[in-house]
Amino acid sequence: MSSAQADRVPEILVFDSGVGGLSIAACIHQQLPAARLTHLADNAGFPYGGQPEEVVVDRTVGLVQAQLRQRPFDVVVVACNTASTVALPALRSAVSVPVVGVVPAIKPAAALSENRRIGLLATPATVRRPYLEQLVRDFAPDCELERVGHPELVTWIEDWARGRPLPEPALSVALQPFRDAGVDTLVLGCTHYPLIQDELRRLLPDVRHWVDSGDAIARRTGSLLEEAGFAPRDLVRDQSSGHRCLFSAPATADIDPFLARLGYRREVIQA
Image (tube, rainbow, N blue to C red):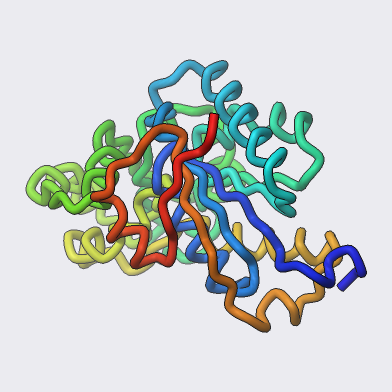
């Protein structure tokens, strides 16, 4: 570790429009337990999928820059497919620290699928974007891709994190196209969805492979920390604490039990 890094733990900022980025943060914590994590949920702008692109860019860049002025983060992870698609170039131009984005895990899904039938569960905005077509052309040209872009699932999960039950009958209906298509591999194309993977597995028992971007993002984050001067052994030696979940607008206390289970405390960012 360089002398500049020797007296502190690595700091990682994970950004999302809601609490979905906590699924990515969990993967980072598992691989890099020494890192201190700050998750920033832009609940004032949630959900991003229906926002104009310029709004997503402005909110992403502005909120991340504000956090970088307050704490020396070493890596920023944009744990939101919509923000990653439209805001990464502007954000990388605006900040001096490395920025990692997420894309649907089409490539690893194609490597796993045996019957070449892949499902993608995502937001409506993600399933419509041209970059998805490019991912399929590049990495899964011989696969059939069944896409479900559900307009309410992220809101259901936000409510579930606050103690409300998932509407299981409606969720089961939403997943029916995957049963009809006989997919053996399912890509969770929104960072919210791994939070309810146990429920999804129960409703789709014939899916053999479940794929998301969390582990790949964690590996990339670790590589960037090593490039910044953190020794690999020091990224895994101790388990950091003091993880925070920041909100851009007041969040009610009903989210606290969910955050506590993941090791986070709730804070509202200061204007």
